[in-house]
Length: 112
Image (cartoon, rainbow, N blue to C red; front, side):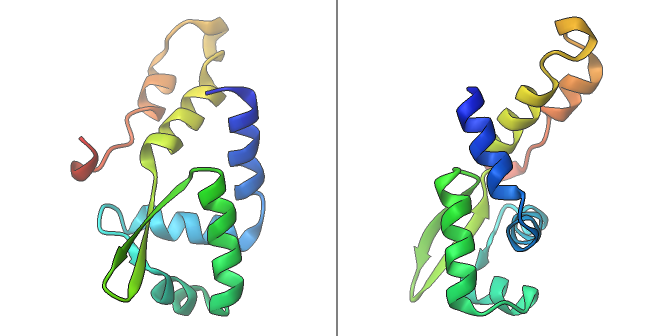
């Protein structure tokens, strides 16, 4: 991951509602959640949530797919892994270590 991409991810997550939304989506992997369910769970108006999800999408932290009349959002665990690897790549003087390897091991069955 390049520094600009990491900064985009970190900036997107540096807002309470977006961080809560992302963490909620991580908890609901691999099935994801419709936008309306996210808004109700977080007690956020749908138009406000839409703006937050757009920021997360621009940072490529969430994926979306239409399911009937709803849009289902999912956390992009590959992007989360890339960010974790970027943050830990200089751990132990740049040597590959167990903590850095374990950070990159976030997986769901549907992502394998």
